[in-house]
Amino acid sequence: MESMSKSSAKTAFTIRGMEFKNRVFVASGTFGYGDELCDLVDVVRLGGIFSKSLSWKPRMGNPPQRIVETSSGMLNSIGLANIGVHAFIDQKLPILRSLDTKIIANIAAGSIQEFCDVLTLLEKQDGVAGYEINVSCPNVQEGGLSFGTDCSKIAEITSQLRKLTEKPLIIKLTPNVTHISEFARSAESAGADALSVINTLIGMAVDIKTRKPKLSTVTGGLSGPAIKPVALAKVYEVANAVKIPIFGIGGIASVEDVIEFLLVGATAIQVGTMNFVDPGLSVKIVDGLEKYAVENNISDLGSLVGSLDANLKFSVLQSWL
Amino acid sequence: MKRIVQSYFFVESCREVALNAYLLRFVAPEIASIALPGQFVNILTSVTGEGPLLRRPFSIARIDGSSIEILFNVIGKGTSLLSQKTSGSQIDVIGPLGKSFRIDDKYDVACVVAGGIGVAPFPFLTNCLLEKNKHVETFVGFRNSTQVFVDHLQNVHIATDDGSTGFHGNVIQLFESTLNKLHSLKIKIFSCGPTVMLKALIEFAKQNNISCELSLEEHMACGVGICQGCPVKRTNGNSAYALVCKDGPIFDSREIIL
Image (cartoon, rainbow over the protein chains, first blue to last red):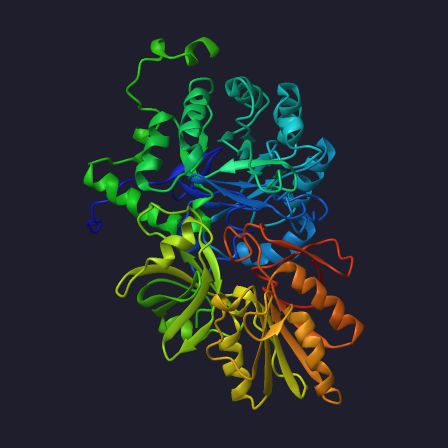
């Protein structure tokens, strides 16, 4: 006879047949390459780690000042500074593949060819569970938003990459468009397995003494709790437009925040900016979610996904969908 | 052994030691036992969510047994909240972070050159230098006499912009004028202060071929090298910036361009 297991909720879920142990992930650019925080965080407790954006060649990033704190949030203009995919494979992947959690490589590129090259190279390596495609960085001249704000480009990138991999392919969308649902549909019909919603919002801050922008690149990307209401609305819009799973992102700082994202239609979530404030937050959320499920008699957290009690008839969203 | 610790620690005291300069002391044996001079701690200034979102980085000013002291000016909301901590308050601290001063190389005199609140890392460094039997001379510049704080420093020479205490002028002028007396000795400079001062010192060290280490400051989000938010330009034309939090905050003056 099987031994009785203690009361617990099902936390796992699958994308394209790949099982993730739970729904809590850390967002690209907020957790390094995954190995740096091992002193402070028990990373194997996470559903997975989205790597810092990887490009074909190393990128030095933007000049200082790159960070500005704003009300309940922060602006960044890092400019995708990264060690490049080759150094990632040589220096980081050997450590990462030994960890019992899923590593999703985030790819950023200045051309469709570069996206394909980086993904093709990563396909040959062990230890990469899937790909998140960054077509939504607001802080670079080439690629970034010029891809993410053009439905046909998103479709083209997605379909090209789809041919190259059978692993989960996740497209990370920008909120800096009028109707994010149109972009979500483009990615879905071109073969994306899931969507990450949202990347940062374009914002700026000004030093009134010098009359200069605080960021060297004038504008940057706003993140943190300040953007959570925007992110929830975007996830809700996308969830009503597509059938593929959504990774909800935007200012998540607590178990309650995660539940909100699940209710509006996110299948899983990524903790982002709050990793800087409390590196251990994501693991605390893993524990907190299980406790929440048990206390509320929820046998599978998946039952919360998209279960919002709302009437879309009364929403402006309906006319966009 | 863990190299970085995150925990809540009890504040022992916080008091204004010079105009708008606060010395906060907290008990953190886990950090005190492993910290090196020049390293910093990243502090959440409010645990109730009422304060700024991000942590604030502070040089470790002094270690006294299992206690750590930081020295700071009140600049904004975060430092204001921190200055109001009282004995028994708890603060959320990550540390020790960053690279330390390198004190073991060969030199006869360690010259500490600091501007204003830039004195922060030097009581700790001075103590370590004295333990290594190094001779220490300290040059500190302030705007005026109300800002002077030079506790736990060694052989202190003070400059003030208005002449209200010590030498009338800036700290670089004071340092240069004193340097003649040390002519045949090999010196090493340890410095922290405003960017204009550090720039002048980098040039001075280069002209006179003197070894010089600087403690830099930059806006940070994570403090551990994750967010890439605190770049400083390298001199060697290498395509990457150095990060103040991880590659620094201590740099050789020949490594970087301010």
